[in-house]
Image (cartoon, rainbow, N blue to C red; front, side, top):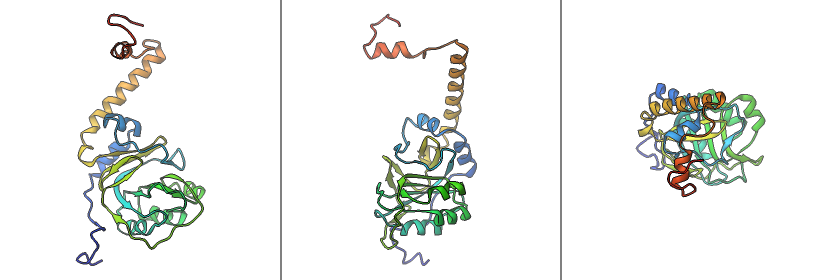
Length: 232
């Protein structure tokens, strides 16, 4: 493509984080990452995996489409790199599927890590059998058009979260958490600490050592449920 005449709506270059850092983040549950990121970045629960066994972690390639048109997703597939996650602002429209088996076969062959779509997909059983990580807002057998321009690698909004190109996308059975690229490295130690604290808490519950959160009385006093000095 002649970049001198390319539309400003198409940005080819994306600053990606080191794959080792992405792999470290991808080893944590999406819930842990959402917690240590200040309970930010988790997409709406309406965007969910086609199968609970699906997991994904990678750098975001962001796509904005008009409802029911997937032209720009085909463009994203043409320029994405192995390990990328294609993140599509489909405007929440469920009247037409934006991707199906053929495009997922293509994405898998290209080494794309997965796709997140605020919109509908189809051929769900075939995609599950392929094992390609697909997160979507719903299903619809109707196909899309391929003629309406959109934008590629501009910030997009889906599931209540703004996603910039190069942000880290981590998804599992619970859904998808977006990690801002600039903050990603600083969350590793916090995530390890959170996992350690939760592991200890579960062990204390199982052993009977602590069947009530240590913070509960203080929170109840702060909320006015208990008076100062009172305990449960």
